[in-house]
Image 1 (cartoon, helix red, strand yellow):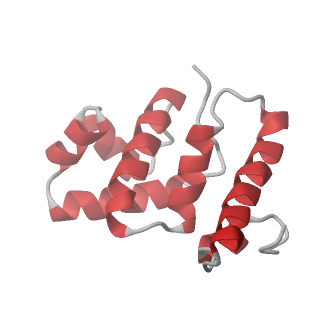
Image 2 (cartoon, rainbow, N blue to C red; image 1 turned 30 degrees about the vertical axis):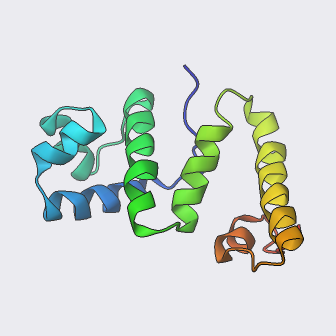
Image 3 (cartoon, rainbow, N blue to C red; image 1 turned 120 degrees about the vertical axis):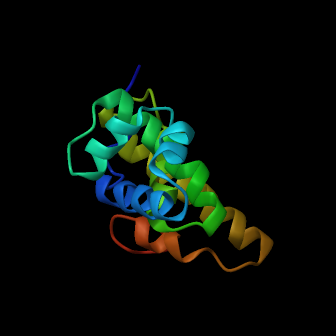
Length: 128
């Protein structure tokens, strides 16, 4: 199985897990992620996750993060999932194409593009 996009900062996921465990419990979050409580504790303690574990954490991060609104880290994680399976060399073009589609849809609808659009563009230019 392809690895998740490494563009998602593991520290952003770690912080979301930390906040979720403070709000509920280590066991509840581990169950939601699909991993053992001890494995989740090791992740919180700073261990680097295996590829399969990072994929589970990323999926949880996207699902859990959607409850609190779309941050640039959340969108980066979701885009990584959408582009999963592409070779690394094609992911940059894929990210650019996804951002272009979102930009175009907002322009056509006459709505303000989300702030994360400019943040995720490599040059910071909302028009690409």
